[in-house]
Length: 347
Image (cartoon, rainbow, N blue to C red):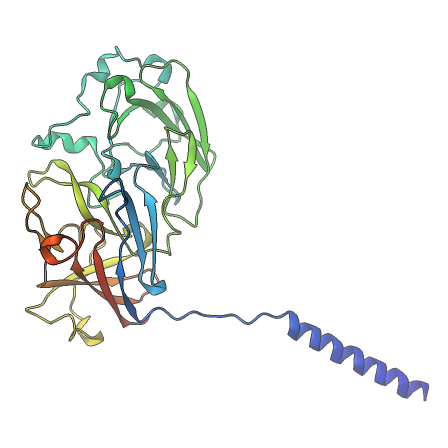
């Protein structure tokens, strides 16, 4: 009898353990990518038609906005040590000849360059990061592991074009992250900010104006395209400031291809049509090619109805994308472009 009771007790313990184990094991939920949707992007506020940067994740039917003036620079989180400018904030920068930030003053000969650049001068392209998103073509050189090799830079941005409002800054490596020393050009007190990398993101952003780290972008796998006001090509190889710039998440392994409706219409485009397309990892593969500009007085302008795009996200999903409106000339509203996208092939 005692033996039987022992066996029953062991069986009950086993059952209880199994039941508890089942209760604590949470099922892995895999959310399928969105089949597609239509979104009105929230780029506009009561203050401006282009106040926000809007990031869009097709697979999640989601948009995230960031104040375009919330940061001044970004720092790469991968194995490289690169500094990028905020192209949405009319940011320009140039290197001085000095490596000691305290030695750079408003009277320094190196400050003679005009950061309030002439957009008709192709040489001013060196003052901005190149708009195709090539991380090696930035105004800042890669941050060297040797501190003495890192120059002090001058930085200007929208609304702060007076020389005494410029920032002087020096970026060095700090272990696996960065250290930034900076001040206004007319100041003598140097601020310091340590910035760690974050592998979940393409970039970690910094507001020099507010002395803090800002995370403007979603996680690197959480967006496919962005819409914003940005630095772009004037047409002469020189930079200018452009509304309605659409970038792909090239640092997050997103690529895209443009399709003419003379080859295939948006509605008719299917998975079999992907073969033969040439996908680009250039940040500006969409750029401004999706719309025509209004006149100087604001009249006209419209989305282009003869092109659409195929976007491959970081998970291998293919979406077809078209723009439906963006301005009064095409029945839309400036600052609130309407996009439409559809899943073509699941990754």
